[in-house]
Length: 181
Image: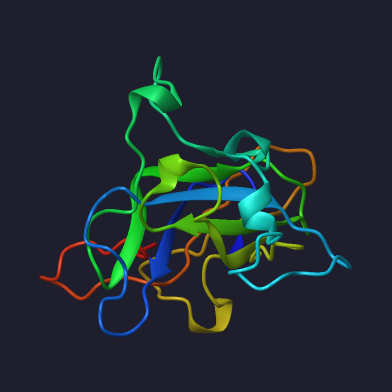
């Protein structure tokens, strides 16, 4: 997964076919630094990195977006009770890392309070190494006569706006999905 710094995002874990994730809400996720050039043990090995790193040794600059006055202790953060996927959409995540940084995502299905032994790696999140910005809101050759195109970036050092849109949307009548832009 690739994210943009300082833009909220939702984490979704696709469970193996047949609904292999537990149906309860006792699941947890944690983030640990991604290390390159270090031997990575299989998930069942006792020296697997997800089993060794405590939760608070997480990547410090990856955090849940909380309401004013809330702390992590006030909010029950879990991936929900579905068996086909888990999605942490109750509170989005925010990354305060530089471009090109990476961190590992570790998941625990049940019994997570017993320590770190039940966590295993489910993926790596990369912070985008570059962000493309369009100069115009629409192609000037195909511009509609009724709508004037807006020049997004014209002057360096002047105020402006950039809209981030992933292009993924649900069909009408389906409701919002966690991956919608």
